[in-house]
Image (tube, rainbow, N blue to C red; front, top):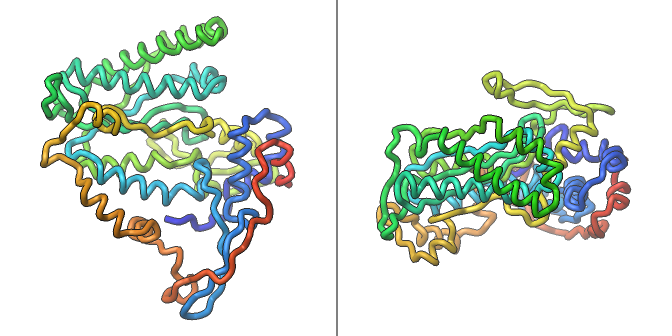
Length: 393
C-alpha cells in the first residue's frame, strides 16, 4: 500500500541528527546518497505535479518519490509487485523456509568489507543447499534467497532467508519430488555444521588474499568454537503461501516509519520485537546519532543484489540444463504474460494493495488528474558530505 504519512519518519531522524552523524562518522558514498534520497523523498525538491479531481474540483500537490531501495516510503508497492511476479513463476510443490544466520563475533569483518562478506555468505548458503540436494536426494534443487542484515533494534545481524522447493532433477535429468523427513527438508544440525565450514573456509581464503588474515584471526577462531544455527520451518501449504511469507522479508528496510514513536532533541523512541521474550513488542530508546549510525550499517554496497535465485529457479541454469517441469507443477507463465500485457502497473498496484492513489481523497468518487507539472527545485548533484550537510538543520 502506498505510504500514508506517519507522525514521525526516518527522514525526520536524518534531518535532526544527520549533521552530527556526518561530523562524527565517515560515511560511505552509498550511505550518504541513501540519506540524501530519503530526506528528499516526496518533497518539492524532487518535483511533482498539481492534481485536480474531475468530480468535485478538489486540488492537491503530489511530489515524486526518490525510489531508493533503502527508503521506507518506496518499498511497499515494489514488495507487492515482486510477490505477484514470483508467485506466478514458482513451482506448484511444497516449499521450506530455511534461515542461515552468522554469529555476531564476525560482525567486525562484515563492517570492514560488507560486499565481500555478503558475497561469501550467499555463496556458502547456496553451496550448502546444493550439496545437500545431491547427498540426501541425488537431485539438483533450487532456492530463492533474500539477505537481511539487521535485528529488531537495528543491530548488525546478517542472515539469509531461503525458500527451497521439495523437488528437483536427478543426475539423469529426471524430475523427482524430494523430502523424506516429516517436518523439514534437511537435518538442521548437519546443515549448520556444513554451512559453518563452507563459510569460514571461504572467509579465511579471502582474508588471506586481502592480507588481513592475521588481523581477524581471533574472530575466525571464536566462530569455529561457537555453535551455528540454521533454522528450518515446516513446509507451507502452497507455493503461494511461502512466497507471500518470504515477501515480508524481501523489500524491507531496516526500520519502517510506523515503528518510530517519537523523536526528541537527543533520542529516538521506536518499537522492536524481543525474540528472547516470545517476540513481545517493546519500546526502545536510542541516542539519535546512534540510531542513524545503526541504520547506515544496513545500507547495501552499490549495485549489490539482495535477492537471488539459484539452481532450478535461476533462469541461466534452466536454459543451460534445458529443464522441463512436470505439467501439473509447471508455473503458469503464459497466464502471467497475458496478465502483464492486459494490466498496467497502476492497475496492478490497485489490485494488489487495494489502494488507488488517483482516487479523490475528499469525495472518494472522482479521479485526480494532472493540471500542472512541478519541476525539481534542485537536481541531485552528487553525494558528498558537504552537499548532505546543507540539507540538515
